[in-house]
Amino acid sequence: MTRAGDGVHPDLEQVFRDGYPRVVAVAARVLGSGDEAEDVAQEVFLAFSRSAVPAAEAPGWLSVAAAHTALNLIRSGRRRTAREATVADREVAAPDVADTVVARDDHRRVRAALARLPRTQALALVLRHSGLSYAEVAAALNLSPGSVGTTVRRAESALRKELTPDASPL
Image (tube, rainbow, N blue to C red; front, side):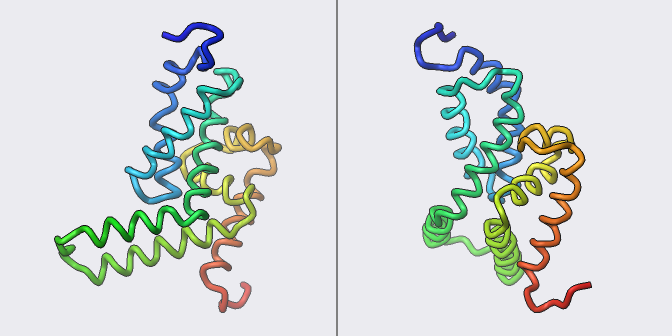
């Protein structure tokens, strides 16, 4: 257990137990990788341990931090480098290589398009599709609850446009 004044958040253990599954789920939703999501969770809880965020506000703070950290990982290109190194080290072929390549390319395109969206839209979309309610998304992003639906719809529309730039508007 931690003592007050030792530089570690006093509620870290309980917040970690309660929040870890959601943090990993949000990061995995963005990254598409459980291993990388766990790495993001470590970064997020390390940041939380040094923060002054009240335990009552931790769930929203952690969800936003997970989405931010995962998006930053995509934007930095470290994920691509690590994935390429992992693929190069593998000697076992996937059962259906063509399907795997197409699926990975689709996922890469979606993640790249998501990274190009305005940050608030990208975060709202990720958080909402990670299972957070409109109220939780609003609290986490400091938005009015009534604007979450509009923000998510705009994000979905912008994502569609990013993925199909030649498509004509409906």
